[in-house]
Amino acid sequence: MHNRVLEKFRAGEKSLGTFTHLLSANAVEALAYTGLDYVVIDMEHSIIAAEHAAELVSTADGAGLAPFVRVDAIQRSPVLKMLDAGAAGLIVPGLETVDEARKLVEFAKFAPLGNRGYCPSRDGGWGMADCYEGGLTAYMARANENTLLLPQCETAGCLEHIEEICALEGIDGIFIGPFDLSIALGIPGDFADERHINAVAHVLDVCKKHGKLAVMFCGTAEAAKGYFAQGFDSVTMSLDIAVLADAFRAVVNTALN
Image (cartoon, rainbow, N blue to C red; front, top):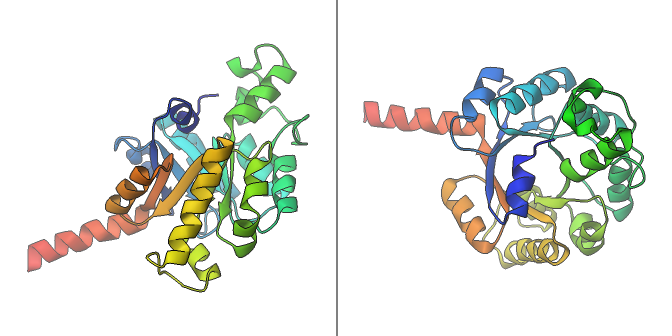
């Protein structure tokens, strides 16, 4: 179970990724040649369903990118299916309460930490991969350690309870969704507002306090550089469709103006 993002975090190194909405295995494979560390397959804000997500997880993994999946519900089925498909980590939106965070741990982590259901599936080479060395108990422990569970902090409830959520065993880090967080704070899209700046800094401080991975989303390389300087362990920059459109807009402006 090789998790590039986790290995970098443990080594004190930063990681950079992006979202994919393109439903294209070729596009995901091409991202592996860019120097990115991971790709987030977005099942929340795209039409990607479980079957296609599983294909993209396999493609990313084979190409050398850590495959993360943003699931679309705090439910057992999407969590279990994407972990069985081989996701290196799950990003979970819309979390409001500590109880919801506990439920996520129950779904995503094997006993004794949680109650993840077991089946020999792709994540463990259908029971034949090296991660089974030492038997089923050893495999379960490796899976718990190496698959990252990252709730999104994007609601007023999550922000209010971030200390308790981040302290939970089995929660491996926090992914900040700045747009929805700004909306929850009553300042939609105003990332320069002191309330948003303070909220982001607070979540980062809590992650550092508990030794958990702190991940930020942003829209530009310049913003990513700033968040790394602030101390974030990982930044997810934009999404493939937006980067593609921006690149062609620049081409059009250069060619026609």
